[in-house]
Image: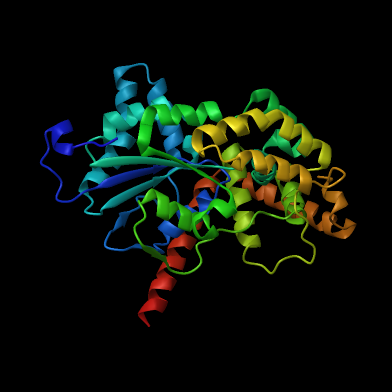
Length: 385
C-alpha cells in the first residue's frame, strides 16, 4: 500500500522517499525491547534516519482509536481526531526516511478501524506505509500472558491458577489467531508482515534484530549496547509482587505502573538464589494443543508457507511440560519471615498510594521515561569521551 502525498492531498512531493511503519504487537513478543532500543536511540540504519515520536511506546493509540470509532457527534469526532492530526503533523515535518509507531496495544484494535484511521489521517504523511506484527506460539502466549496479568495486578488473575486462566481464554477464543491476522492482511495486503516469535526463526536469533531487518526492508544496521528489556519475572519474584498487588486498592493503570516499576527494579538487582520458571504441566499442555492445533495449522498454511512452525511449538510444549501443576501461592515460595515483611511493607505502600494529591500513574510513567532518557544521555556522553 503506497500513498503519494501530492496525489492524496494536493501537497508538493516529498524531497525523498518516506516510509511510515506501524508496529502493532502482539503483546508478549518483545515489543518492550524494540521500543527501548528506539527510545534510547541505539539503532543506526545505514544511510537512513528514523523518527521515533515516543518516549517509550505509543500504546495510548489503542484508546484513541476506540474513542474515534465511538464518537457519534461532529464535536466528539473532532475532539477524537486531534491526537491523530497532531501525530500526522509531526510525521510530515520530519526529514527522517522512516517513522516508526510502536504500539502493541493495537493488537486489540480492529484492523478495519486502523485502516480507516490510516487512510483518513496518515495517507499523505509518507510515500509508503507498512504494518508489522509478531505472533507468539499458543502455549508460550498463555504462560507469558498469565505471568503478565499477575504482574499488573489483574484482580481476577490474582485469584486464578494458570489452569483457570487458560480455560477462560479458551472459552473467549482470545488466542485463536487466524481470523484476526487474516483481517490485518485483508486490510493492508502486501504491506502487512507477520513474523513468528520463535527464536530459531528470528534474524540473528534476536527479536530486535529481526524487527529492524524486516520492518526496514533489509537495510544494514547496527545496535549500540544492550537492546534487551528485563527478562520475565521468575515465580519467586512474581509471588513477591503478587503479595503487593493483593494489598493495593487501585485502578488498573496504577496497578500496571506498579508492576512495571517492580519488574524494572528487579532487573537492576542480582538474581535471587532460586529462580523458578513458570511452566505448563502435562495435562494442561495437552489440552492447549488440542484446543489450538487447528488454528496453528491454519496460521502455518496461511502465513508461514506451510512450514509447521506454530504446530511444532504446540508439540514441543507437551514434550517439555512438567508432570504436575505448579503452585501460584506465595507461601509455597517464600519463607514465613519474608512473607511477614512483605505484608507489612505492602500495607504501608498501599496506604501511601491512596494519597489523592499525587497522580501516581503519571508519576511512575514519567519516572520510567526519565530513566530511559538518562540512560540515553549516559551512553551518548560515554561515546563522546
